[in-house]
Image 1 (cartoon, rainbow, N blue to C red):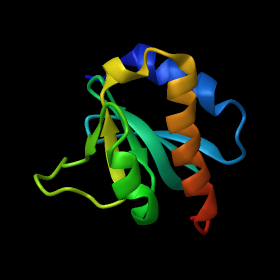
Image 2 (cartoon, helix red, strand yellow):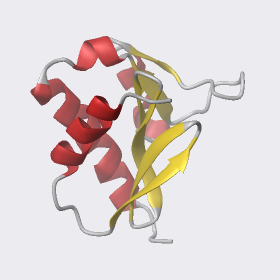
Image 3 (cartoon, rainbow, N blue to C red):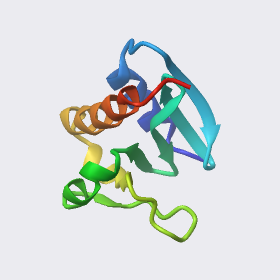
Length: 108
């Protein structure tokens, strides 16, 4: 089960991005841009794809931690605690990071 309200807030933040789709995965929901995952919701947390170049820097942001879904951190992927996303501006900043990174990749 995942936080449906957070998923709705992400949909609003993503707006009408070109090539936007949704897919159930990781026991939650993932949002894709051009077939590349950009972000999603796992339980109450935002899962965001920031890429390996931004990973270390963004790991220091409030609420951010390594995505360790498999027990091993996935470089370029972060969880952001849902409690750190109460502010719409903060959520949009994280969602845009993920969507911009996904859009920079070759479409699938």
